[in-house]
Length: 238
Image (cartoon, rainbow, N blue to C red; front, side):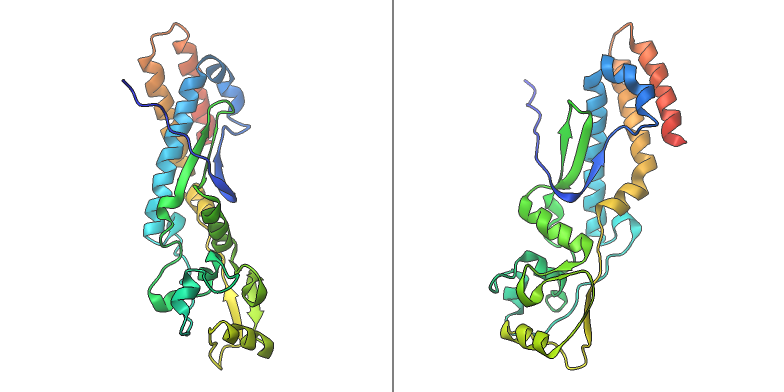
């Protein structure tokens, strides 16, 4: 007895989406209408593969082959508490500012939070974060945001260090060096560079998977579907 398919919800506006593009969709209209289950399985297959590629790149700290900027180093008696997001209202995305002193890396502990959500009715799939908290944290890291509110909050770019800012940081027992004139939280994108670097391979895998499943299907409409798939493969490559 086969196990039922498992479906997960993914979160985050920075998640990636897999769907048939406008240039390809007309050439797969018949195939999608006649064999929607096979097309859906093809999309699910490449979404599962892409999830593994994202995880692999995160382990190497280089999504799409682009190294992630290291996390900043801060001094403070409560730095471990800061990293866990337990100082007042400062939450998980405070890690974008700190953690170097603790030997942590961007997205450390989040690799298994990457998943995908297949939508067989719309013939699409989304690759993203498996929880809302991971999505908030991941979105902040990808965009270059820091903090949740109060003195730690900053939405990307370089931030001048003022005397009042030093006092607010010190109140959280995070001491900025005297020579620190500004703080910068660089973007650390994940999904977009991985999608961009794998788009050709993704298309090839999709076509190969659909063709494999079509040839396993004993159906008189299979020949027309295979011809249409061949045309779609050409469009993918162009």
